[in-house]
Length: 119
Ligand SMILES: [Zn+2]
Image (cartoon, rainbow, N blue to C red; front, side, top):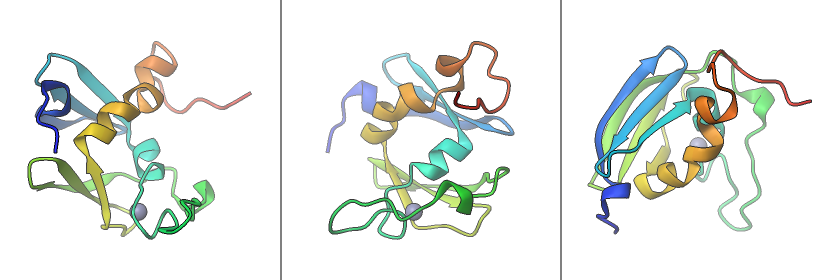
């Protein structure tokens, strides 16, 4: 497993009600929309183990879904307990860092003010 600074979080904390913040050892900070993170879950319940087909429909995830617990998995991942009862999602740090661009509200729209609708 990678122990590169860009895959090593120094701090993981709720930034606000809808945003999880991760500070990385290389000085970068990632802000994740928590629902986007829930939808990005890659566990066997959410993504077909065999062919990678997504099994999770966006409509199945409540708009106000939020993490209620974070647990370290070794030194390479976190497991998130979600308010919708889903607890099997494991997020490797390397994957979180790779997701950074798509899930970050600040990257999507400067004010980070809620969800953006696709037009
Ligand atoms: Zn899952």
